[in-house]
Amino acid sequence: GDSVTQMEGPVTLSEEAFLTINCTYTATGYPSLFWYVQYPGEGLQLLLKATKADDKGSNKGFEATYRKETTSFHLEKGSVQVSDSAVYFCALSAMKTSYDKVIFGPGTSLSVIP
Amino acid sequence: DTGVSQDPRHKITKRGQNVTFRCDPISEHNRLYWYRQTLGQGPEFLTYFQNEAQLEKSRLLSDRFSAERPKGSFSTLEIQRTEQGDSAMYLCASSYTSRAYEQYFGPGTRLTVT
Image 1 (cartoon, each protein chain N blue to C red):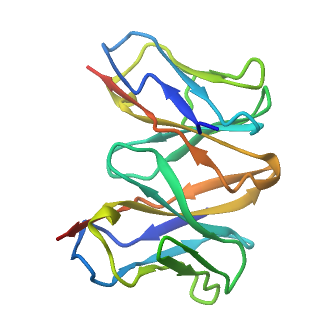
Image 2 (image 1 turned 90 degrees about the vertical axis):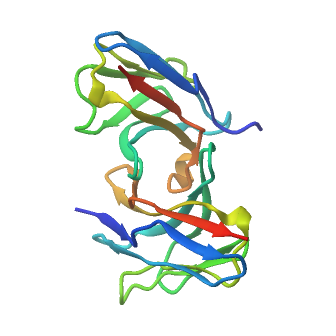
């Protein structure tokens, strides 16, 4: 079945470091891909999305490119801030019958230290 | 628009008791979803509604679980005869039908069964 795999955490970085969180997926057809973020004590928020191959999603300095050939959607940010500390979830949505079911990876916890 | 809201935010109950959670989606959204999230995992799909019709239920949703959306607006999720294994975060999300992949999540209800 469809699934998402992402790198295990926790990840700890110093402020202004470069961030990469790896994500790979398995799906039939052509899923849409997402990164969601969950800040401490808050609900999940959609961070960025890409709906077709080679699309690049971007938001708040984060980027991810939909790579169909490697079935990947790695999250990157050039310079992280303390406020980026959160749990990041890679997800996909593949059309199943009449609805788009979102399947989440296990999440990667990021801590950014000053 | 105040986003998706859920009530209560936290619920502690004893094994065997019944609990009910409420979700108020974004008003223009006609789709409403319930997910369950356990510690260290991504959310898992439970069920979803298109207006007042419940169109899909996961195998995770045992007979002790029931969800309603009587007027196509707010939804309730009831768990009867709670078990310790039901302890989790219960998340609600909503979306437009035409953009079902873009789901907006509430802050969740954390259930602890003692």
